[in-house]
Image (cartoon, rainbow, N blue to C red; front, side, top):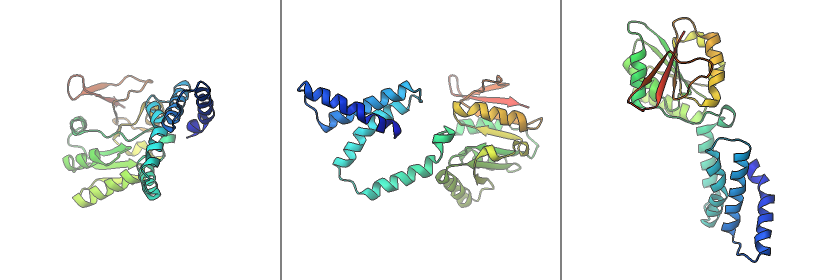
Length: 240
């Protein structure tokens, strides 16, 4: 939003310039100029690439929403939904990334048999992996931790309705003691991996595993890289 506010003055200048050249200027033109300026600023300050189309299309979407005369309550409900879904993504830089059943199966196969393990999915989202592991390994204590309230609530409801033994905690994994767990599964983002490694290296006990889907750790090469199919997104494994 600060970028959009900052783009107002350059946009007004460009609109004035077009008007002096006797070129047609409409609200749509102004919205496109505003979005283009904001997208350029986003690029220049080095934000993630996915912010550029958001900044580009935001003024146009705002204009379209105004033209449709949508009730203000709808925008409030949409804001509350997105807030509940993404919560503090602006701070953690970890958006909602759902994993899939093929990855869950690979995680299950990596777990040593005959041992009652404590497993945790940090940033567990809707709880798919945790619920799956609780079904496949009833001898294990399967936990998911999620900071955003809406996915956390959905995962709690799924566990209760299905009668699963999986447990879901709302909170920040940085507040956990990793020494409690035998396996940590993470599907976070590149921005979070250095901090995750520092915490894992300091707290995980010998014999524990750290698993990261898609994102590597610069400080240490993985001990094992698993791909569900050739060319598929990798699952990285570190043994302690």
